Image 1: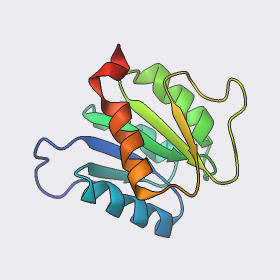
Image 2: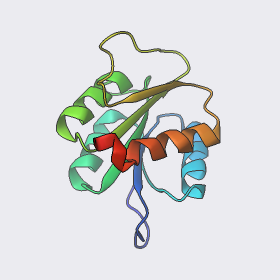
Image 3: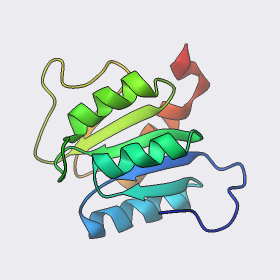
Image 4: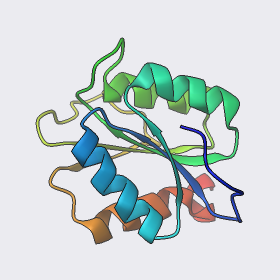
Length: 131
């Protein structure tokens, strides 16, 4: 989905979620917190967005989704191809085992409270994270 209008110094979050109602809720939470949100319904679509939008600061992804990759594999590939982009992985069904996530990614279980979601995304974007 292309943004409508200019992005005025808002940090950009790429949201990867296949469930429309969950995605809509997360978009509302993130936009209310001051983020510009780009949406993808699976990892394949999200990769296309990342290739076209180098200004993406963070990715929020579910684990279980259709397509060729799950959220864990997607997080590993984002860390390899876009190491400056923070990745937050969430799931209510699947939990990461050793090696499922790159060290730079964060996992939180669902349900995710809005304030926790925003805090985690902000932490991924903080300058100290890169240190």
